[in-house]
Amino acid sequence: MVYAIIKELRIHQWLKNTFVLIPLIFDRQLLRVDSFIQSLLGFFLFCFVSSAVYIINDIMDLEADRKHPKKRNRPIAAGRISIKFAWVIAIVLTGGSVAAAFFLSPWFMLILIIYFLLNLAYSYKLKHYPIIDVMIIATGFVLRVAGGVSLLVVERFSPWLYVVTTLFALFLGLGKRRGELVTVQNSDHAQRKVLDGYTIPFLDQLITIVSATTIVSYSLYTFSAPNLPENHAMMLTIPFALYGIFRYIYLIQVKNEGGAPDELVLVDRPLQVTFVLFGFSILFIFYLF
Image (cartoon, rainbow, N blue to C red):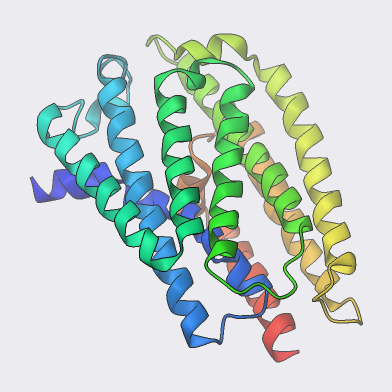
């Protein structure tokens, strides 16, 4: 039962919630103890609420998941966790997180509530509408960044990062949809309703558009943000961003690996190395350069 609960929480997907830490790092407050603790607590509260959303989504998709080649092994679909107990876990996680968020920041609590309600709407209805479903996913990432901002006394946080976050999240969401479409086309199982509105050529075209604009917007950020080194050293991080995007496109279009981006990061060594080097270069330029 304990293992089933842990699996249902999808802890490996908590990686997405590191976007809450972006304001802490990019506003150069990582070494401030109070700011670090605030952001870290906010990160975990987002993790708990996102896990609650996953549970509710699995409850709503119970019948569809049982027909899916992979999702049928999820604890709720496999019957290892009852629906009643799953609701209890989701309610406790959500209620406790929202209450704790108030003591961190009323604005953060409001953002957390909006994030939860938006994901409820996504789970109940919006995930069935092509393009809108991916835009909702991107909005969730932007809310994570906004939540991180609300926890700090921001000094010179660049709005360019909201643009980069939106585009990058769209890129990942479209890649995930492509992977799902490839998976169902190679199996005899029925596909999700939203996938009826997508084709692989259409998704590839959208991925091309969004990946290009993501690279351009991040490049503009590296020499136009107000809190960056005057010698434009931040531009040295662009090659890592380029390779990471190109590698992901390679995996989903050439290797047809698809799946969730956070899962690919956990198994693909080049992406892992790129992620580490990208993070280290940012920390070096901001805090040691």
